[in-house]
Image (cartoon, rainbow, N blue to C red; front, side, top):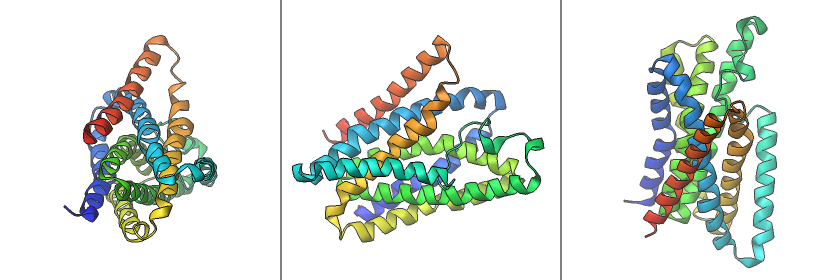
Length: 263
């Protein structure tokens, strides 16, 4: 199977299949969804951190060589700052809870604000998915096994995010069918990102370690800045224990997948 086919298949896994899984998740009873979603977020945190620190960064360090270590870690730092700025501009939106700003009660915002929130979610999600596609493509160009691990991490955090996106679109006045179709279309930008990476980065091999470093910084930023703060809303011991176990399970899955594929 050619490398391009690998990239296309796993970009679909990270994008389209995540939307389908999120749509299926929304069919569950509301109480069950509310109980399962925080657990999915905890697992996603572990998968993201595992992929960043056990997969992407080690490969980036290997590819950069000793001379470029400071430049590489600088790329991680710039990546973290860049994603912070993107989120400030509301272009990189991760909404996993009904309590976020764009899920405010109806009386706080008018109908135009709701529709604008839905449109903004689609724009931001398309950009986010496109970047995910580039990162998946870059990982596959480095190593097929790394590409698979990266795709698993992308899918793990995309599912709870897509559930939040569906909720925003429905709250913004989209019908269930339209919300599904538009979310599905925005997910296809993952494939576009993967194709772009395949045809551009394969000719720019020296840049691959730095793309992997930025990929790692994006995973770390999503986990630490977007997802972990939501877990602190539950402070009881039992909830904390479940969170730690599920984060560990996410890390363990990435570690197992990475070590097994390289065996």
